[in-house]
Structures are given as C-alpha cells and as structure tokens.
Length: 308
Image (cartoon, rainbow, N blue to C red; front, side, top):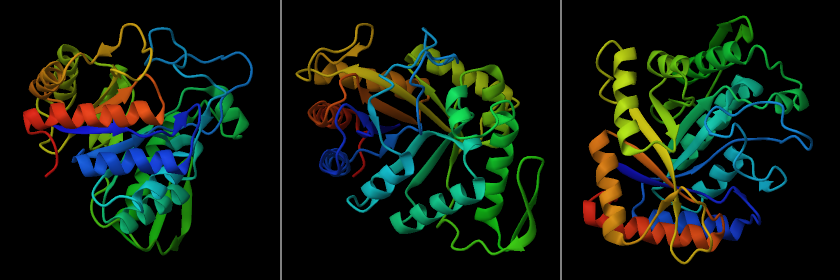
C-alpha cells in the first residue's frame, strides 16, 4: 500500500507558500502522492443537489471557502517537488472540454516526468453545471465520451473522434502525449459507478471507507469485473483524521492517538487491499497538514509503506 496526503487547495487561507511547504514536506517524507479535488464554483444560495458520498447529502466544507483550481495546483506543486505523485480525486470531466483537458493532463505529465493520476467523476452540483452553461442531464454520457476522447488523444496522433456529445471530425495532431499511462481512477459509490470503474477505468476512489468496508467494496469491484480485478487496478480510499495538536477536529473521524495506533490503522487498510490511502486532516490549515505529514511519516516508517 502507498500513503498519500491531501494538499491545501481548499482552506480558509490559500497561498503558494503553504502549498509548497506541504508538498515539499510530503515529498521529502517519502509519501507517495499529493492530491486535490475539483470544483469551479459553489452555489451562493440553497443547495438543490444531493451528495451521495456523505451521510447528510451535503458538502462537508463551507461554500464560500477559498478553493483553488485543481490542475493549476498540481502544476504549481510539480515544479517544487521531485518524486511526489500528482492526483486529482476527482476531476469533474463532464463540464470540461475533453480535448483541452487531455492537453492539460498530457502537458503536466510530460513536465513532471510521468507523475500524474487522474481521478474522474460525473459531478453532482447541478447549479455548478448551470453556472458553467453545461447540461447536467447528459453528464454521464459526457463523462464516458470525455474519457474515451482523452485516451484517444493519449494513444495516437492524428486524432479523430465521433461521439454524441463530443466530436473531432477533421484529424488533428495531438502532441506531446503523456510519458506513460496516466491512470484513470473512477469516483462514485453507487453500483453503476463501480461497474463503470472496472469497465472504463484503471482504478476506483472511495471516501471514508473503513478497512472492513474497503475489503467489501474491493470484492464488489472484483465481482463486477467477472471475478478478479486486473492486476494493476488501483483501489484508492481517502480517510479523514483528527491530528493531535492541530486544533479541534470533527466528531466521528479517526483520532490519531499515537504512532503505533496509526501504524495499526495503516496495516488494516493494507490487509483490506487498499492500494493508496489518502490521508486528510479534518482541520485544514498549513500547520495541521504538516503535522499530518509527520504523523504519516512516522507511522508509515513502522510498516515500510514510504517511498525510499
């Protein structure tokens, strides 16, 4: 199992200094990857959509909190780090032009030396789609065709594409292509999302799964794949931690009480078949995230889970 950390893209105060400090600390600690998530805007009024990944159906952060654009963050971090993987979990593909998105990802992968991981999802806030003037009702088709177009661009040049939502009728050159395979990691907890992950993606990303539930979902993914997941299929899970000394955490999240206890948590997720555990602090400040990096480093060292 690899250990990853959330980067400070969505906090009360965002800055290049804090972003760099956290990313460099994670890179130097041997942590596998740094991750951001993806939203362009949030509604200023009442939320009319339901989030299927939270018990309340709402969003866990304030809508008026500063939120940086995901790929811009990773491009910034790429120049400050040497080996840290760069992940978006997940990028809302349907409200982006897939040709432009493919170019952004390929460019970042080339410039970073092949460090990019692309989580993908349909999106769930209809008001966000409305603000971007993108149809919400066709987002599933736009996701599937968007993934197909991006892969076409990354595999061959010249490129044509003939879909219902997206088309490239006249051949175009798409160069450079990524240095290797950019893994597509599907988000979504529903049964259809799990089926899409094994049919279309190189992995799946979940949120707040216990080790026991992680093992169950891995079996469900295997069943959807016909019995066994492909050898290189990535199972990613993010988990929120209350970090000691970082301030008041959130009730119901995992409390880090000692290095030994956190090492045992990591062992349980490793045993459950999680390939990347994305560790997040419930308190999103630069200090809290640096403290989390140090906790992850200490516990990960005990289990041999850090990059050397």
